[in-house]
Image 1 (spheres, rainbow, N blue to C red):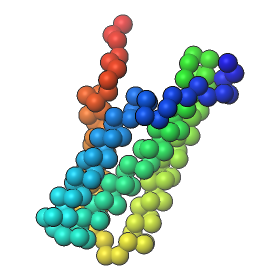
Image 2 (image 1 turned 135 degrees about the vertical axis):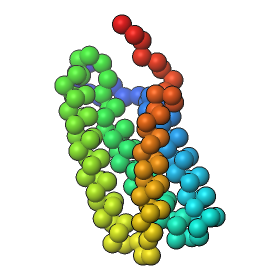
Image 3 (image 1 turned 90 degrees about the horizontal axis):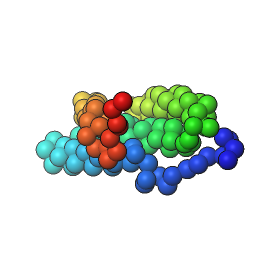
Image 4 (image 1 turned 135 degrees about the horizontal axis):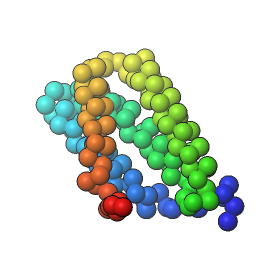
Length: 135
């Protein structure tokens, strides 16, 4: 098989899929809790912050896990770098859009759920099904 031809798994079979689902569940639960506790503005501000964290992660997962196999090593490295660059740019653009378009906006709710969504990634090894073997 040619290295340029992606050997793709379906998106729901990627090893990062449970982490993305956990992030989305935490975002929705936290936004609903903010909505009930602090009102509608906090709820949608928190949801915006969560989506600002989640959508770039979704893009990165799609971009970074396109290739597999030893023959595609260069393509894998290139796709990881491109995915990370795109993730950073997308995050900056989404933050700018949120502050320009969404009025009124509660910044503590936005940043709070943004950080909460990112913190789900810290616990990603607990959510992964496949364990790395020790040498």
